[in-house]
Image (cartoon, rainbow, N blue to C red; front, side):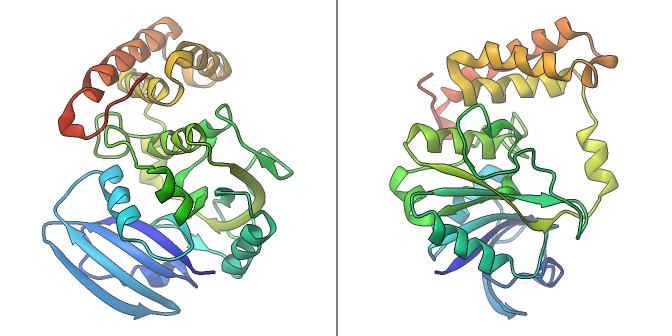
Length: 275
């Protein structure tokens, strides 16, 4: 069983950052920078294929990775993730144990040796109401299943796109709609070292945050968007809304929904929702 990491990165002169990730599998990298090119080299245990492109946007990058990857199983990876010893064997065994799983979601932590952050203690099949909390670096999938279903990342979502996030959650939503089976396993395969810049970005809860969240929720949940928006607001009211009025947040989320509907009909984005 061949496992391949799919890594999106930016402005790299070379692929030496792979050493810090402690990979034991091969990697396909899309490097968004100011040049076009291709390089291939062995770094540690990995054969690293890096495609440099002038294209921008995380979803565009991941769609390129979907097109170029080879192998049986792919892992979505960020360039700042560090993998734990034995992760490759654990993941391969998981896919052998669950032959009906098209996508397996695992866990990460913020320090090596810490317990997983995941709320589920046992394996479980995931439905649409579970997917909003899944991070991209927790996702692996059978390449053949994803290609057969014709899955792509929505270029309106993700970093560098109008709605800035949730491209992985929309991807999982589309997988469920296509009849693919998503399994969660309570195993930690990697950790994400703390980063002050990332934490500052995560704390930016303002009108723009809720505008983007509204567009993302509509993309993922369609006609049930309002129900999930209200559930999100009520579940977060004690933390997110100390400095933000709930009515204002909901208003911005409705604006985001309207904007997504308008933009999703624009052929230049290559995506059109039927919702």
